[in-house]
Image (cartoon, rainbow, N blue to C red):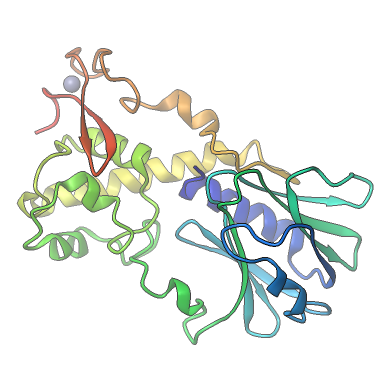
Length: 273
Ligand SMILES: [Zn+2]
């Protein structure tokens, strides 16, 4: 599933490709993905200009010049591409958005869990459907003090706590697992038992790990924007995720795993307290 770093890289690539482009035509080839696609045809997108592309959580928003945005989420198998008309439509490409320059934005999704909708923007620049999301992990609101405060009274395990999008968005299983290992915090600790110092480590490590993943994903993305869920080169830098039964790279103890919130959580029983 595409995580925050993939969404960030898609967003940057779309911003490079589509900023200031003017929409000339919309084609829909299948009735729905996660939600119906036909509203795109009657949304009067023709003539609108893309102002900029921004990311919120794992959503990418193409802001238009009329205070609306094309909102997309890549589900399990969403792939977007910007190509021209000389490339034939692929079987699972459900939507083409044509631009006056001849570019075409194409959305492919084999499993149809993706989303592509047009929404009005609220005064904060975000559509109402995304208003309840927590803070962005790469922005200023994500601080040790904020996490300590949010965790007050919460007996839930720290790993699902940092993966909860109501608190902080986009820290998926891989990044939560790696962050807790780097911070020497056991994934089963109750969130309300962590100290400010431990939250400081978690905030710093999660930022560093997400930024590194964005950096490594960035090099493989150009006009062909692949969001097939692979972790790209970052997978080679994982310390502990998916390595249960192997030796801890720090102390040599055997890496264990527990299920938390339905997700496998690898940890080192010696390093993580
Ligand atoms: Zn260890």
